Amino acid sequence: MIAALGPYLLWEKAFHVISVIAWMAGLFYLPRLFVYHCAVEQGSAQSEGFKVMERRLLRQITTPAMLSAVFFGTLMVLTPGAVDWHAGWWYVKLASAVLMLAFHGACAGWRKDFLLDRNQRPKRFYRMANEVPTVLMLVIVIMAIVQPF
Image (cartoon, rainbow, N blue to C red):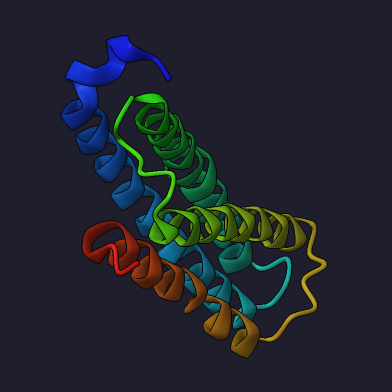
């Protein structure tokens, strides 16, 4: 634990929440772009336009926001007294956050498939995938705010 972080806990929380909001916005929108991308012909001008949008969303918004969320979340964990290590909710929240990171990685892989014109998944797959961050967000927010156990 780093005692010097104590006075900055509220700032850490604020920047963590801001970062998570930006990260979630990207994770909500990227699979939706994949749904639309599935509906156009590979190699078409529209397909190339989606590739640009997907790249910019992932590289300029979603990934930097994810890195920032992880950074400020880590600072909070290192702040003495910020985490009750005996509370079960904390571990559920952490596991859900790790799953969110895995989903981010999956989105990056799917974007690469579209970039290389090798996507084999149907629109329905991406519609279903679009629900994953919502479910994880619900679990994370309930664990962090309600702290049910």
